[in-house]
Amino acid sequence: MNLSSPFHRRKLLLFLFGLAVFLILINLVLKNTLFSQNNNGSEINSEEAGQRFKNIIFSFGIEEKLITETKVKDKLSGLLVPSFKVQVPKDLSIPEILQDVFNNFGEDSLLIESVEKNKGGKSTLVIRNKNSAVLFSEFDYSKNVSRVKEYFAIIINDIEFDELKDSILIESVSSLNFLIRPKSNYLHSVDYIKNNRKEYSLLIDDEIEEQKYMLGTGYSVQRILSVLKTLVIDFSNATFFVIDDNSKFYNSTNHKILSDELAKRKIKLFRLSDFIFLNEDEDLLTDFSRRMENPGNNGLNVFLFEKENYEKINPEMKKFYKKGYRIINSSLIIDNFDSSPISE
Image (tube, rainbow, N blue to C red; front, side, top):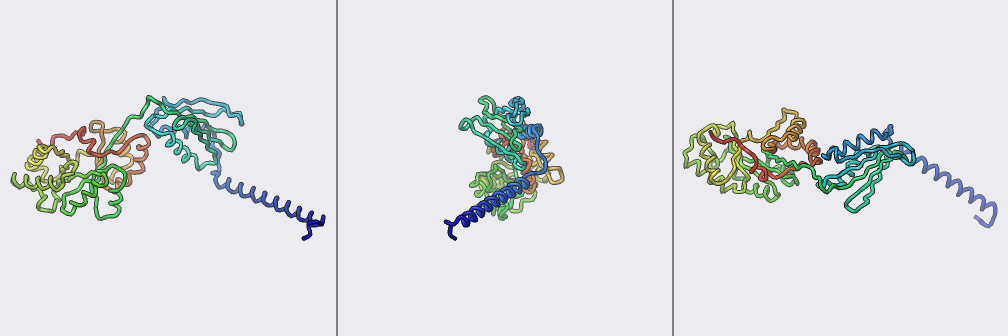
């Protein structure tokens, strides 16, 4: 093509102009398509945004007295919108709250802006619907306020060491105690538990199969002492012993010998009924929440779960994690955890 020709130059310019218009139209179509995909069909207003925001703050166990709510005028729309100042307890991080805000409002067609004004400190948040603000917030740490610490412990009583799923549970980050019935083939497995910073306890009941660990109702004192010595040596790292109070052994005179001898060795002995057992016949989530909000024994909760029920309870447990509740090793609780006398 001869570009020195006015005809050819004009033809090229028209082509480039047409291409530019085409690209602009394509761009507009793509923008509208992406916007409509993110639009859930309803626009959130400032009142709804404010209520949802407060629900997020309350879910972290932040008391209402630490939240100040006012109204400010949005410069663009001229409308009054909610503005919050939140004093964040020093045991909670502002980024945790902001992440929850992003997750909660992320499905709406909103623009969420967050700025950390002071490194590791004061942060601001603006939520916009298109260009207009629907909510302002400022977060800062409170030097004198911490949330009330709430701790609880979990015991799982049906672990199988040769199952992959159970191995994953043992290697998890949660502080758990595994209640096991004494068996010789568990001697190496209990090391696996301890190496993963977990705890285990021994269950004494009528289902023990190995003779050297068996505690019978008609055994002599010497026999009881011999079995106990074997248990204490073989499972020396057990956090405590647990006796099934529905067992024949518990309802015999021999359980007092066991109790007294463990006490001499400063080894704790509990009943199964001393712990909160939530089984699958109950409304697990509702009952778990009720127990967590009303701790029993000296203000402490020690739960006993079948492993399947422990997995079911995890979603509800996360709500309490947000409030500052923590699972801790049962060994940190038992000194303040009361059991009624094990023998009459």
